[in-house]
Image 1 (cartoon, one colour):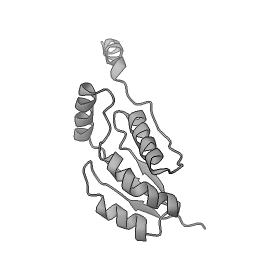
Image 2 (spheres, rainbow, N blue to C red):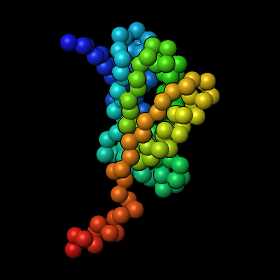
Image 3 (cartoon, rainbow, N blue to C red):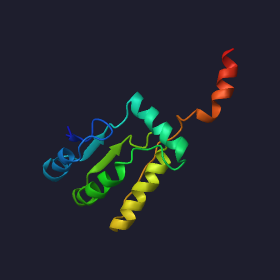
Image 4 (cartoon, rainbow, N blue to C red):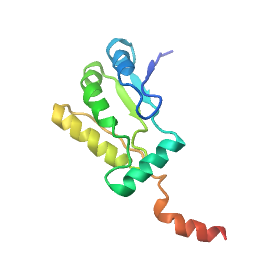
Length: 128
């Protein structure tokens, strides 16, 4: 049986980066997962996206990846986060830019499809 070791990153938006740096540096992990979203966080991110359409993701994902990508790339650790929040494509673009700046070739996956904001009127009309 193959053992897969998964480390934990942030537990909420704004959580300290220091513990996950230790996990990346000293842990024998192949994956690190970050859970940055809660209902309140989503409301904050939506408010941010309304002010700036390029927003809607947790802004700490950029400094987090700037610090973690070099370690993760060197050690073969895959990073998994829901920091994309309301705008996962925007977060993916921001992380890709960080990787380019660092000269690190990385693969970035982005999961989309749950944003129904543009369909609220249609869905409300169906209800009644």
